[in-house]
Image (cartoon, rainbow, N blue to C red; front, side, top):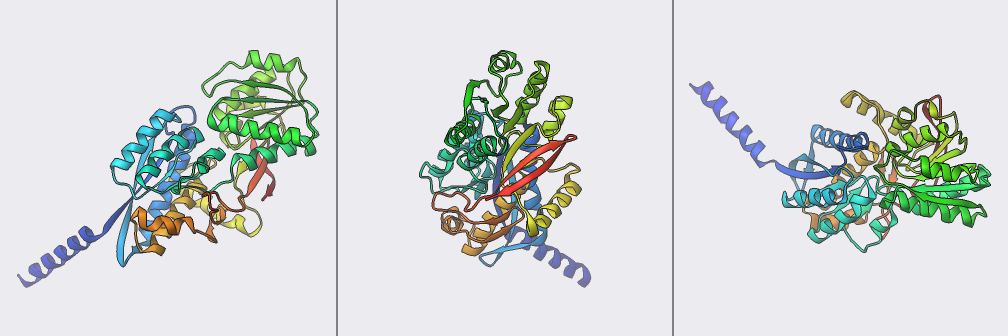
Length: 377
């Protein structure tokens, strides 16, 4: 009887400890349905891995052991669905949110998070407007399109010696934004833009705009948009006999692009840039992350998962340092983040919430595999 009583008492104490453990809800929003679901799932996996590793390690905030819970929502890369997902998370009393993936969903959702006082870190939205709305709750861990488009524009003109550069965008906040910055940089570097066309992020037929551009004999075509559109566009360029270099931002700079383009992509034909990147001694951290990610999800990192992983950990670091998961209490600490060592490099925020000294990486593709050209800051 005594043994039973002791076991019963132990069980009750254990239950009490579990019940006393505070649950901290971290939201994640990305497109896990639709044409770029592979990128949305990659982001969500990055958040999930961070949450699982934090819970396995054990985290104490304000003297209490805490457990993190991931609340994941799908915005299908649609602004209306994005704001609905944001409101749903706010209603669930989340402590913070990581996302969204696209600028087109991140920007409208950011007002809702700001009005609710909930910190938001985007791991991938690069449109400058996101952090220039005056919202104290908005942060990002990658460089913006001013830097990304600027780098690509200068590279097209100075390094690739482009003489006749055409620009196409998908009319999304991201695609048009990065294309605008690219065009500005080309002109500032003395390059010539021979045509500007546009499509949509759901289009499949690009023959009319490509035929128009073919007559102008471009040596470089820049596309502001995502890989789901860029792959078929490359196929149609090949069908028309257009042998121009093809450039784009991080939206096309994925492992999936080679599959989507198939044999239409010639070696070194595509040059793209990703917001972020590591070199030298920092490479090991990124490589170790890729191994853990592959082991957990049985698939390779697409692009943004490491930035999502870091975003979750930066947010939790601010909670630990401020001894609170209350958004109002840890937000000032988050804003002062500096020198945080993540798998994607050192993270610190400026007064707008942008990453300081954000890296950019230029890539090309050979034999269907992405290869680094250089990392710049």
